[in-house]
Length: 585
Image 1 (cartoon, one colour):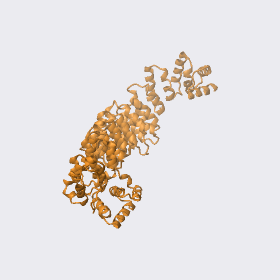
Image 2 (cartoon, rainbow, N blue to C red; image 1 turned 30 degrees about the horizontal axis):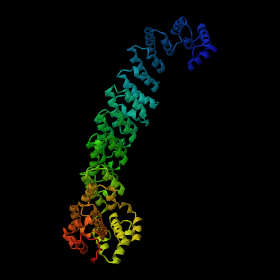
Image 3 (cartoon, rainbow, N blue to C red; image 1 turned 180 degrees about the horizontal axis):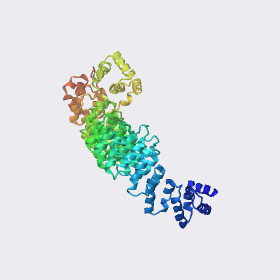
Image 4 (tube, rainbow, N blue to C red; image 1 turned 60 degrees about the vertical axis):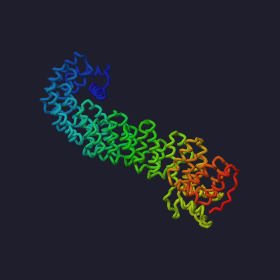
């Protein structure tokens, strides 16, 4: 009895052979009353000769059961193993445990019979079915899958094993079974990897995932990694849950895809109106044509792509810089941050599209940035377009604050009564919505009249940072004659350029540009300063300025400018400057 207990413990815990076990096994062997169960336990620990005799005793013992006979197979040659299998197949009482043990020892004709017995046995469990898949025929494998699906004791691991062998019709019920048990995405990923050499089954599983209404985002992500055709990818992104696939998962799909699949992924993402922002962010680095770049940036969520993402793409793929800028320009909803970014890389022909864009007034940048943008390029046409456009960003000709356009505001500050000027100044300074253009005009007027209190009030205004134009400083910082003249060409392109911008430009203009300045719509309103300073301190400017004023009928109709032509006539151009004494309106 003691020997039997020791052998039972050894069998249960898989002990290594030792002297005590060998002694116990020998005792069982020598005992003529040992039952078949005890004899089976002794088999591993006795000599080869003793095993042969013991096998014969078990085989002939009237109390031997199928499980005892099955335990003999590891010690027998193949023909005798199959004899044991055939003998057990004739015993109706053979349990599923025994039948499963025998599957490895049966012949090709016996194995299907063993599997059929297990499938039909009322005591069979999912563990039994799973153990038989490697031996099942193409006909029997779906039967084992069905048996697992029908079992109340199935677990996730059983469903995952069954999924490897399921038909297309069976796959959906295994992916998400009636008990709402979901096979983990990593398990599905392993299955798909193992099926790569079985293209038909691989495709069947990918399609089953994309077509199953209950597929989870993680399942769709795994299918996306493994998808091989445009139709499979399109089906995955057509699934309602695809919008919940994480950006990281989409990024991984791109990372491990070949070039053709990457382009298919970009097309599928941009074609889906509901694609989330993170999908577009993942797609942009892999856009491989101007069409795809535009599709990403002009997507409904494309306007939310962070500028650093766009900048990284342009740095990585400089050949698409122009496409990025064009896409930003073409989208009327492009945010000011995108427009601001595009300004730096735009060509001369693209610049107007940015600076006339509906969202342009949201652009925020400093004078130093503007100057650096001009310094970065030697394209004089681009510089002119940049100057023209930036005037448009800060001067709003159609603004109706106080019922005044910018042009009328300048006239009121110059020619209006003192009470009216005071009223206008107070309202502009105290109104938080006053535009930068009016603040800039007011600041110039206050500087000319040394109204430092007004200047301080303007500096505290919430829109003060938008005042970026200080042309005198800009010209000084550039110190490049051709670029200075390109800026003047630019500001002359727009009719809304304020008079003080025109006035500050005179010191750097050519003779022909001076004529254009005074013939500009606002040329006749150029303020007293800095014009009188230029005439007094820069004798070389007197003759071209007088000639330019005389070329404009509008300028000659104003007392101040007509007086300058008289004061600095051809007879007095070489004389020292005399303060103007002409009366002013």
